[in-house]
Image (cartoon, rainbow, N blue to C red; front, side, top):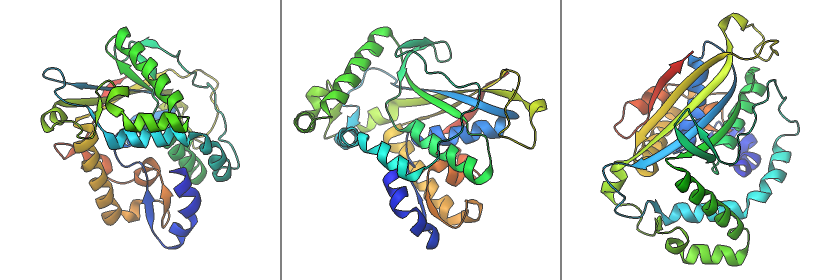
Length: 309
């Protein structure tokens, strides 16, 4: 995504073309969830913690959970992960300013009362997508960038520890060419049956549920000023918890999200920033009706306020 931005952002702006990356699950829930939070917070948001959960309802899985294509993308993504630092240094010559209080990382494995589960750092691209949007909104609109960390939650310590071991094994193996070859040749073995060339069955897709719970922390409205990037003397006390949920995340929700974003570009380009460019979804669709469009469809996504204190 960053490579596309580095190569084509200026040309896309010159030719009035929008190229929007990460328009599926789970970047759309994460990035548009940040926009949803900001619109409903009634104050200034300092930080957000996001917890992804997914499960198969109505009995155990009856097929593989993930298609081989996703596995292949993850393998090659990790293989080239070390290139990101150089690409980002070319894209962003200046670092985002750090605002207090700094959002601290949670332990490697921990129990969260927010989702009542055992959590690990989420290994996907959600945080990088979100921070690209936050940087854009800071640079173009002067908005205070919201800090964000992403986690994945499991039902039990046993499942979480097994997942941590799997992530470690996968990450180490994918770093080497021989490791990548065997990961791609024997996906079912290395994923313990979760991956196959056939992917999940239709019935399992429809029984698969996801939710992304996001807890924001910041300052209430009385502290708000015209300068949204100001520092605050007092610690943040206001919280807002939202949940983005749906079914069939990998196929139904992703397809709906992709189609909705395409329609929004065609119908509401006047509400999008500038005249084009390579953008993450939060930056591209912050002022559009994308969230309400996603909520209209059976396989879309529901955005709801869970707690406001």
